[in-house]
Image (tube, rainbow, N blue to C red):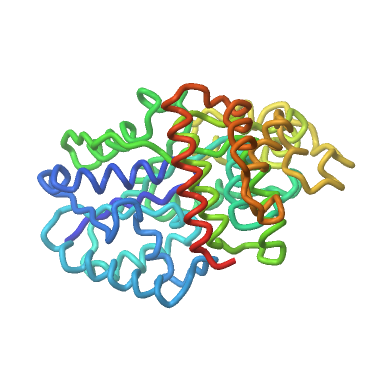
Length: 375
């Protein structure tokens, strides 16, 4: 019999950090009788959802082949271990029955199944979702249309595996031990398997700033205006460039919703927050579910304005202009000259020699990468 621990997400809740840590800790986990493996360090088991019939914008024959190889990798090793960990943020979108059917393809002899999930305040989740969506489109859902019943998804898991085998945590530095999702996941694993687990430290994906998010939207509209919902090469390289800059220092302001946008999302999703609190009283979502009036009615600042700036608390337009100025795609395919680049570095806060050298290196790498990409 093989016991399973399913880490099912949610998206934008530290899954990459957890998966990187699990991969780096495979030997330590194996010593504790736990098997975790994937074909690549930070891939997790997201592709396995394709075998359960879940479609996505990244689906392709090559991805399905990767899913089949990942399944074979797990099948070959699972019988040697007491526990197998599967981790994929998109598992939360599978029904429990579909997910368990997928587990049965790994091992025909299933013992215990424990499920681990992280959730966020709906307003925070909406802001992160908008950032993610803009990587594949210049369009985003208006705050009053965002209504995601993650409470119902988790209630279905509670009904299927029982409260004692469903571990739901709030993804927030305030509520995680040492503010770290990997530390929290280590503790959950240890509780489940009955031995201390110490996973290797790992960092989460860095979010883009408000200003970078706006420039990304401008880029998508200029370069891929009719390709909503597709992850395409040049915008992927732009995100890598922005991420490289943020590893030097954050360019601009951390993304946050305006007060009105936050209120609209909170009002629209008060039932979701209440549903989560009813099922999992240990969650602290009172701010998101108490004292909410009906959803405010428009028109709103974003009603006739498709700029993401319309939903943000802060977005410095001068910084947006300087970021845009160094991107050929937003300047008639003309590369920025030395003066424009130096001015951008100054305005974006890259002042020391080491910062400027790193900035120029990241910019040069982006220029080379974009030239290799088909439009």
